[in-house]
Image (tube, rainbow, N blue to C red; front, side, top):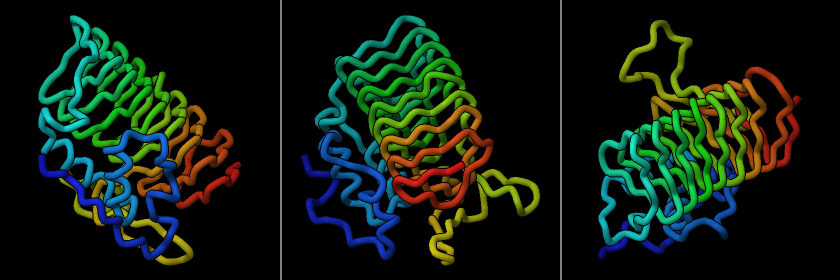
Length: 243
């Protein structure tokens, strides 16, 4: 099979704080996922790369390895791959294309929508919703919460009633499909994401306290500590503390 991604590294990002390597440690990721991140010049390219991967996935691809369990009573529509040791419980709803990684659990009452990758060991619980997002691995969303149009690193905990937001709401009535590009500001310079829906990038080993709402285009560096608060936005550097 022709490889989906070349082995040549991507051109480095103009700002190193936008490179996937700033947010994610790839040594323990599945090879295919690590290769995907390596081919993305910035974190803004990850969602499109993942969409292409899921749309072109065939049975010979390593990510298409099946062997997991779909319980009777689960609602599964479209192409959904459940890897070995993974489970979609009765009462969960999954709308493909979606990959549920090895050992992950999509629990009763959870909703996973199209173009999402639920990485190894993730737990998506009752009332949690994921759409058009990549969860790298061992992400816990055990309570009602929402992640959309986002990229989430390994060992991230999403507290109850947390939510990403992906649309601008400062220019009159919201249009669907969205019209206004999401931008981020780094060092006083505004940078476009190239997308009209973009939620957040959350680096490895971050915990979102219950009730946290992330503004569109929020970038959270790895190991950032966020104290309880109702709204977070902008760029939070790696290892920072936010009160």
